[in-house]
Image (tube, rainbow, N blue to C red):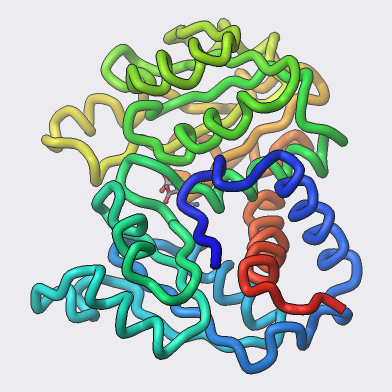
Length: 306
Ligand code: NCD
């Protein structure tokens, strides 16, 4: 039995296989419409979510399976003080696979130690978000043809943004990747990512503050929201929240084939006028999240894919 806690739990070969399967599922959904018949996915979400939870549920329904779960800590027994390890022990006898989101870093990992079913980390605090990374990689591969030979700008809240941490972890395994890390001083990438991931793998990167300076060089711009819920005080959040606003004027500085990604939800950091730019790929990215999660569920459940 396998769990998914970090994108590094999958080798690059396994990732390719997963993306190939997602491609096939996208091209011929009918072929897979029954492959999880009789299987249940539990979505245990202790933190808000729209895309991740609903795309997991849509993915399981597309495979002919069914779903159960809760969408906030308040509506689960966590509100009564139950531990994640007790919860997962019980859910192991109600479902065949579980996607778990939790505000505490490492909570899904703890759950996996006590689980009899595969557990997927659907976001743990400011730490990791591996299925968003699968979605990001899959979107990059679909639009660019390959993952490699890219200058990637990561912009916004690089300190608390778990999607950025997971994505960097995953991308350093591909050839000729260079990062431009664009953030205010207070929201710089954590030291453990800089030292243990970027420096360890000899990955070229720059840290800068002005988005305009990076725009002309980028093949991909990955925008992120300032993670309000992880700030210690509201004043700091209010000071930072509109630090970056990508608009049509800034898009003029970018390459014609640059693509803009964002894990969503967007707050103010991408002006709605950018949505009509053909380089805006974030809504497509959200859609691709369903196919890659279908592929992941089928793979972890080891169902026979027809
Ligand atoms: C992200 C998350 O939850 O980390 N959202 C998502 O899953 N698509 C990004 C965010 O909330 O800013």
